[in-house]
Each structure stands twice: as structure tokens, then as C-alpha cells.
Length: 179
Image (cartoon, rainbow, N blue to C red; front, side, top):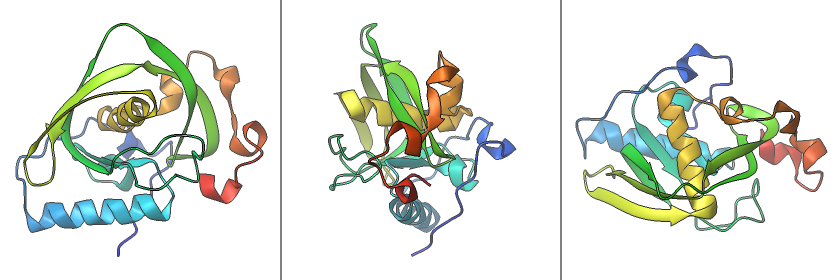
């Protein structure tokens, strides 16, 4: 089990556009996926993008079979490894909801996201993924994929008065679960 340090907002490595993955089903890729899953679980993350651990590749992992302590009132999202993702909004509907980020610890913000999306890409074996999702699942995918284009959720916010400390906004959550 290898848990990597998660880069924090302000680190310039979080601001770049990640490179596509061209080789699938390699030992190196499987090790990276394993390390990312270990890192995400150790931090109670809903997801993790490779740039968050300093790896300049278009790779995100997200989801869990269990309720996430950082988002206890949200439905579970299927565990997924998504490589070279493409997101297509379905319709024009968007919704605002609260988001946190392992690279922006201790804070939450009200972020607009497409309500329903289709996402495509590949798993670590090179098998295609093509899903149409909505709600929290769609939000998680959009959030994680933003990391691949150098965006953190505060840059998506329309109103920075809706950015605050998790312990103030959500006093029932354990602050240790939001770092």
C-alpha cells in the first residue's frame, strides 16, 4: 500500500493540462492505479485525479461501495478507473451543490455542474467506458476531470461568499474527514 502526498491548491502542478495515456494494461499503470486508490481511500476521498499526486496523466479514480464519510448523505458511486475521459453534457440543466476537494482541505463551496452527463474513456486494461449519469455521480466525474485541465472547484464558483470552512458550514461532519 502506497499513499502519496496530495498536492494542495497553490501548487503549480495542479494548473496544467494532463497528458493522455497511450499504453494500457502495463505494470506501471496498474501500480499507479493501485497507489491512487490507496491514497483516495486513506483520505476518505470521493475521487482522486493523477495530477493531485503530481502525475501528469489523464487518469482519475472515483467511487466506493461504502458511504463516504465526507459525503454521508450522498449515494454511493460505482468504483471506477477512468482514463482519457471525455465529458458531454446532456441538456442544459445545471445545479448548484456543495463540493470539497482533497487539494483544498477544510473548505467547501457551492459549485454549479451539469445535472446529467455522458462520459467516455477507458479503464486501465484499455476497455471502453461509456456511461450516462446524473446527480452526485455526475458531479464527482466533472470535479475529478476538472483536475485534468488544471481547474479546482473554486474557479467554477459563481459566488465566493458561498465558500467556507467545512467545520462551520457542516458542523456535523468530523473535520478530520475533510483534510
